[in-house]
Image (tube, rainbow, N blue to C red; front, side):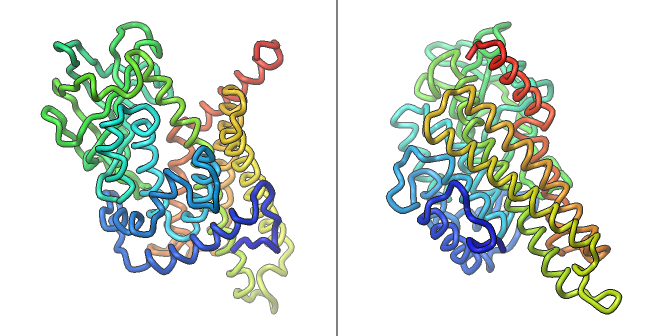
Length: 390
């Protein structure tokens, strides 16, 4: 386990370090008895997260007297710390935030009051419905139609690779109200999971995520269900992703740290050629590389989160978030793979921590913008900077 004595927590104040330590201990004791439900929404786990106050922390603080606006760093602390204890709990918490943050930031007062307390308590499951069969990396190409119907609209089309679908109680849905206008024609809506005309099915992944496909057959939404204004839905989505992308990196850092801790413990325990495994230079160098990649990722994540919380220019936030997600997720894949290599076959035995991490670590390099998308974002912002267009 990483401690303050091992590596100074650059960018964190003392109360942040104390909060993370308290969170780790509370989570270990309180989550150990909750059964896993791979590939499905774990409602007992969400209820436990609500009882622990972790969903409240996600939305309203909990780090000393930190102001409400410091959202990104708090989210990163939550995700990194929980990932070292339970990736299932970490993912459940993060998806609650991703699905409901558009409601919190852009919903009408009645919509916020209807859903956010239930999400915070762990009684309502939230989902972020952006991706479609033909609109993944190019999210502005979405085709879910919002056709005028009196004072409201009817939604027709599909969404896919939607986390928590089809079990969610509430969806933040992005649909096209202006044909042919790409991002400018997208509007965001809140849609209850039991809405007439909404159906779905589960999708099975190697990674143990609850994920599914949704179909909208004339789903009725009214003006009160708008998130933001008509035609401004793409901005709602991007503001949400700018907050959550660094925290995907934090999730990756937590997994990398867990894999590193496992490899370090094994290198001390395992005896080869008359000494501990870490006495082999190749092993010691591998551990050093794993630790360096993990810490570099951690610093990029904290920097991106701080930029968001400090109100840095939007383009700077976007680029730092892309860098954090790219480096952390790619590095976590390498760290987990190297940990498996050091433990050998036992690391791939069903039920072993590394076997779980090996399946879990692959998806973050794809969702919320694949690594290739992050590289494109970084290059675009670099070229704008060089052109003096900031």
